[in-house]
Image (cartoon, rainbow, N blue to C red; front, top):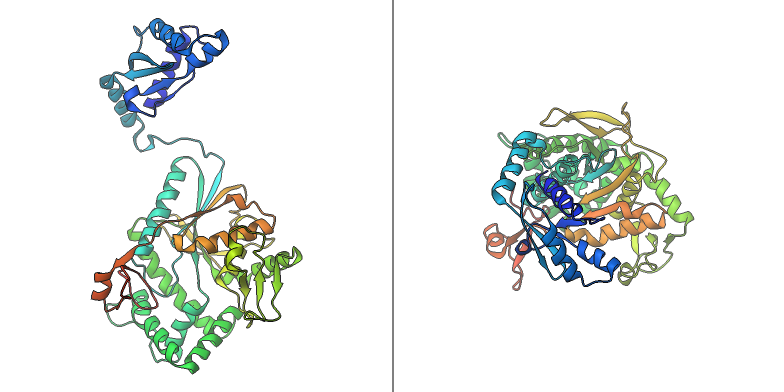
Length: 443
């Protein structure tokens, strides 16, 4: 690169003055040139002289007659500052850009090293809104940067195909009379999110019998069998294909779609839970407001402990999001003996394959070997849950330092926009977070 060439030239110029260690680096302040050196301080220490005098002496002895990029050298308070001839330097940079083309600026710094990046991870019960698009763009940009630097990048999309949000959809299709086919000219993901999901949530919140049916559907989906489980798989796939079409238009690509239900189906949670139990990191609440629940002991964490321990298994036996996230994170870091199997799901814009977890899959993807970092692109509202996951990884004895939460600020609606969409903000509410449950979002 042009900068490397400039640094190399500055080193040579210094070395010709007799400096044994011609230390140079890019200048932090362009007023002091493009390259600076602290070599005078090192020489002065050896000679027991004033570094300012040494810098002045070295500057006077630097021969610029054969310099190609450096135009002048100045000494300031012991520092040597190299200023370039911008006509020649700019030409050198442009020549290199035209010569290397799209590879300009890349490096082999990541060669032989693997990074796992997870982004998007939108519940498969609705279309993507602009807030989700921010996640997609950030995650895909990160993956492109790491790939450009020579890393092997594995891009995951975590698909939460279990839990209350999916039970709401199934409730709408099985108990509220909504057909599986969307209206003419409507996408299936939009039909589910804008119509079925919102109405099912509204009805279940006001009808105790529907709320109980929703809880029953949650348990059946988690059981891995039954009509609700089978219908849910069908709905998830249809919504997911529409969501990925949106991501495709944004230019994003994925390697693997990991279904949350697979964490339970493959027994990952049971394995991780047993390890936590053996390490006495979890306990059973026999009384109190959380009686019948299993909780993660957060007393050893200086910050998380202030808000109390975290429920992992509810009193009805169902797992929480945090529990499944812990098991999934442990899997990423190689902390489970079990691994997923996959089927081909589709392809990316560049023609590369997209795989999805499948209990009957015939493919294995050993992506957890030699992982240097696991980066999770999730908004800042998930800071505490992500820190809980990281702490649980530490309690499991895994390399929790590799687990990185890449947080970002959420996209929110102004008060005026929320009112235009029929929402009534609180009197002092200036911004409104988008919500799929309320149907309050911009696609």
